[in-house]
Image 1 (spheres, rainbow, N blue to C red):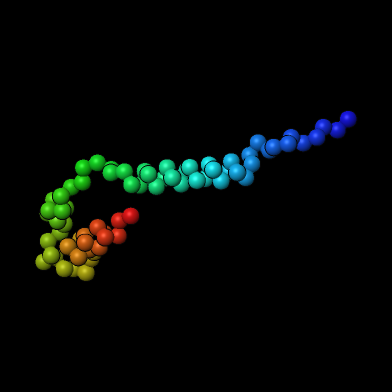
Image 2 (cartoon, helix red, strand yellow):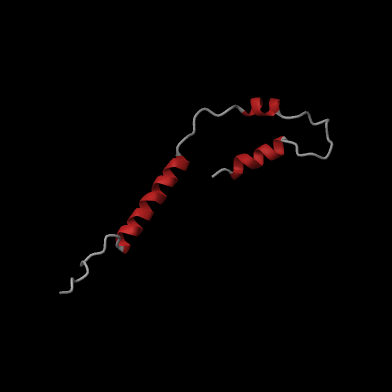
Amino acid sequence: MHKSPPSSPLLSRRRVFAGAGTAGALAAAAVALPLGQREPEDAVAADAAPADQADGRYQLTAHVQRYYQTAKV
């Protein structure tokens, strides 16, 4: 006697796509939520190395900070 396969699989395409959509929505909500108090820009600038130490290394300047602010998602 042969048993017929179940009429609906445990993991249907509809359930997979619904789960993926839910996970995507949760990820988007997590990114949109504030992460807490941010430091003022003046405090960040005070921690940066002085501009007179131009030795060819990476420097966190106001221009770079502005780029990071505009590039945030």
